[in-house]
Image (cartoon, rainbow, N blue to C red):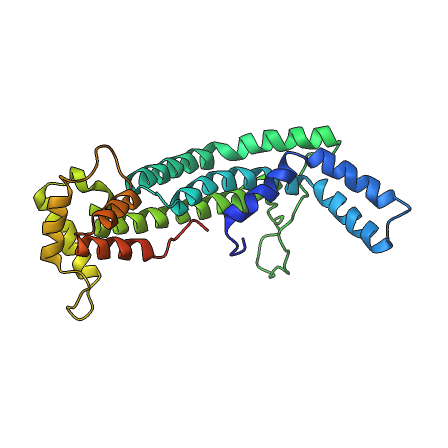
Length: 272
């Protein structure tokens, strides 16, 4: 639940997720080794006990699934040759994945966690957690305090909370990227835009990057330059960076050059 980027954790979580048995075995040897300092023995015992906790095992399986999916989107967003349309498609796919995972992921994770627990000889059960009791008033019925089913409580408070956090993060990034596309749409889809769409994109770009009516880009010149550039670009699909490199090479489109420099200096927001 911390603010650390999720992608930075995937390798650490995967190492534990797929080597749990080996790690616990190594910790068992350490805690009984005569050559280890008492503090290190205590640390090894604590880690050994943690890896034998079924809630920890299940949480680890869930975290690995979530981090792996989120990491794919983060890497796409950070790529120097990121294509807005393909990235939007990737995020949409991840959002659909989490819709399905929210409905089916807990039961499948539970099966995997039980398998890991069985291989380690750990009991695959949740501790029973009772709701806090309170003193009843004289006119209240003498009924038992409701016991929240431990497995259901874990699903609601842990699994659904984490999945919904991931879905919200992806939704926010999708909306931000759609706004980004609306402003910089000409940067990667230049060849597919007709003159009207091109003028609309450039007008939005100019308004967004103007301060008190002043901008580094002359919008009418930018439109004219882009109309010409469409017919002088190399064949095939080109990334924004490839178009910019071409513009720098020919060195006769000053407003386009400035526009692409603005594009590449916009801070990249990744899934965190």
